[in-house]
Image (tube, rainbow, N blue to C red; front, side):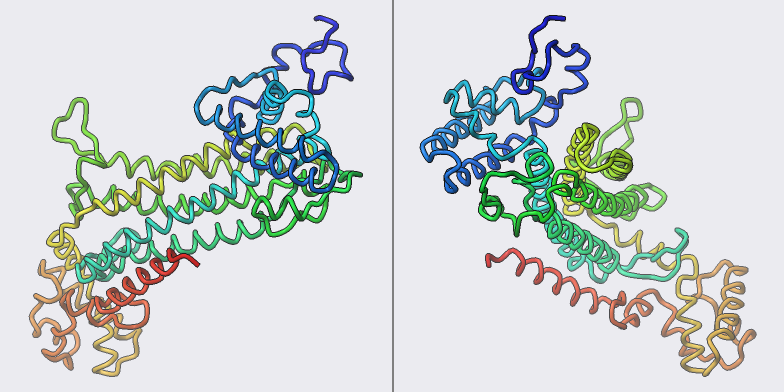
Length: 469
């Protein structure tokens, strides 16, 4: 070990260089360089505020801003050299700024710490991701609502326990996911409201004695207000946890839709087709068309949920305020948010590409005695039976049809009358899948007229949300 510190950023207190393994475990530049745009935006706002409050000169602030713009261009152009010895994005940027403008670069860190600096950068990164997610989810909803409108009357089986339950329409089924992703957008929006407070100015943990204007920097960076407690400001990672929780729920919704696409594409179902854009082949079986994109979307929830759980475990035992453990907050969060974004985009592409096979869906909708509930409802309405009695009678009629190998609409009237003599030929008006779905006119039901109305309503809402102002 030499007697000279290897880190000029914090080396005054130390006599020896850190061990190379310490350098490696301590450095975060391999992943937190992703924060460069946010770090530079934050530094420019901080310098402008320092100048406005008279803490540094306006000429220094101009030089700092000019140097930061040059660094941003270098990073964007792939010409910036990142150093592991400088640990993180903050020190890499500040070191390069010193090379460009000289000693006045050292004034930039007045009245702030890496603690509030990283809290700011990370918060802005997550906020930017949330804004992108909202737009991406709106695009997915658009694709689903358009497909729902196109196929509002295509009949398919509705399932419980993955067994045929009642006939529904494909449009109605797709609109269920529009609703889910709408709630996902609301969760992200709620998380954004809570995270939209600026921690810059909390400094290391206690605030600063300099006469800074935290409201100025908060406004400049698009925040609603500065954070109210300096300790919480640097210790908080709730914003990342909440965003990961919302992403986990949304990824679960993506996974459910992906699983249905996988099932529907099997020859046994044959409900839908995907083009070559979203499928792959086999290295050995030439007949294969594998829904790999859907399968990968299905898997992403594991990766995203693990990131949420991992960050929760990092934070669970930390006393206030900052501990180096919190450096472990970013790498998996970046990975989770990137993979979530990819999954949403892929799903939107698959939904737009997917082509239903109506004849297969209709045939499956009519199997499994899926209109038995319609029969029970007819008995209640027409014969005034208590529903429990009607349920029992309908079950007996299903059993009779099953013994004959017939679907309900094909069972002779005489066979039904052996079970309940008051049944008339009018019963056949409710036993077809077409009549079944048309009858489900209650609000939120699967009747095609409902589906058309709801799909158009969603498309109108999505269009309105895109309008400026």
